[in-house]
Image (tube, rainbow over all chains, first blue to last red; front, side, top):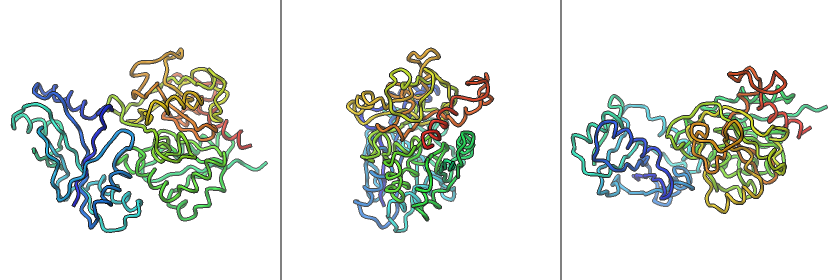
Length: 151
Length: 261
């Protein structure tokens, strides 16, 4: 299993991160100074790291503005910041994942692949668990169909 | 005289195919909407056509990034055919999502290189921007661009935009210099009198207000605004256009049809 996170390269605008930061200030939470947004794709398949890198570099990133990080066995990269991860709940149709599976086949990788697509938000600043829950529930996750984890 | 034939490529999520077809038909062409799977089954069918169009929409739900999945699909399954078609000098257009596809598969700005060297990224506002915009036509200003699609246009025209990822970014400053030097930047967002605009008239934060580019030969053209949504003056809220009946977009499609004739 590989977890692939997509980050905005240095020098390019992370519009989603900036937008979330602006919305957090609207919740009157002042402790957060920056938000980095990273789409995340969890690939469950009998593929090696080279194939995972191909999927990331050829399909999941925009070569001009984005870079990727891969971790195996669902171990996320370590961060000193608070991280909120949002994924669909089990049983909810994940249309992005279905598109990614189709696109992986288009790359010529024909093995059976399962994908979960989600979002990670890296929040810079000291903040309480209560405030993180508030941000997740009010802004980042539709808890009817999505679940969130605070890391 | 043989009728000019345009191929309008569609797939799941494309929603401007019929408007694009109508635009070409209005200009005297015979236009077929063809699903990408049909073309993959009969790849050489592409060469039965004189014009290739990648219409707007939300291919594959804009999943991963706008145009990305369709760009990969076309490059992997039809890449050599699409490249050959483009290098033959026949007109190719990508509108909005189609422009994103052309840029992300690398057919623009250099179909010979056929590698992604620029992108259309998220709007600075992080929102879907939908409005009428003014476009400065570089062709008219310098009268040097070889773009076959943008001849006979006035200094400034209006066309509508509707996109979430339209911010043009080049891989480096050198490419941007080359695009400028070769007059490949054919449309820039502008004010009504052709000056540099501010948001919301520049809807996405594009580098140098770029709204549309072509290859050096001038036959492959991509733009974020929708010319097919302004082929009739009636489509404009104030009924603007030319000759009292048609919109500026018609000139763009007519240029390609006349070029083939």
